[in-house]
Amino acid sequence: MFHNVLGESIMKIAREKKLVSFYLHNIRDYSNDKHKCVDDKPYGGGAGMVMKPEPVFNAVEAVEAQDNLTPTKILLTPQGETLNQEIAGNLSKKARLMIICGHYEGFDERIRSGIDVLEISIGDYVLTGGEIPAMVVIDSVVRLVPGVLGGNNSLQDESFVNRLLEYPQYTRPAEFRGMKVPEILKSGHHTKIEEWRMKEAIVRTQERRPDLLEEKTK
Ligand code: ADE
Image (tube, rainbow, N blue to C red; front, side):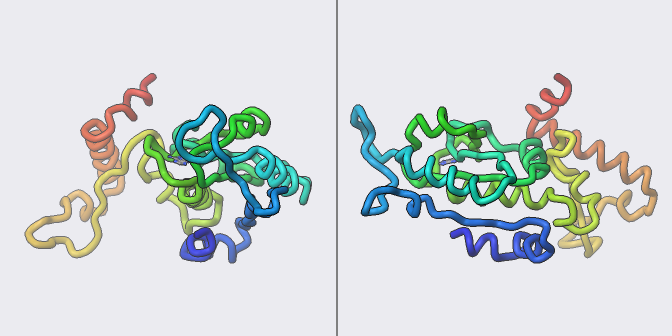
């Protein structure tokens, strides 16, 4: 799963430019069990399987011991803080992240209490595992690492920066099926264009995500 996503497009370029590197570790390799088991039935009964603590602790400790860059450890779980642009921005400044993902109903509680982790969710829905959330975190973070995306006004204007959605964008042709590009954008008048964009961003945010504006004025 990871090789495909990390080996394509911007992730691939970021790696080739040596701006980031990725290391994949299989928690199964850190199981003491002869069947390489990493999950077990929940105490108290109930559906599904739970990630066992030993392989996760073993994996985290072994990987951490590989060098002296202390990683910020992230545990992907629907119970975590919901990922947003600000969190992605903060993570992009860290020298190393260790992203821990399980593929079962949940983690043994001692994983959360015994390892210093930042618990992150990618939204209020439940997936079958943390792999896709891990890739979402990686993508949102890596694109913010300086140098990964080209020249960078685009990062200042995009949605959620300044807690606003992005203003409407247009490219050629100037008219498509009777729908025209607003005159102002063709005027070459940069100050007016800026004003128009700011106004549109606010209107759009008011219409679609008033919660963002409320938090902005708190
Ligand atoms: N694992 C399962 N669902 C998840 C979610 N929404 N966010 C992070 N990790 C998860």
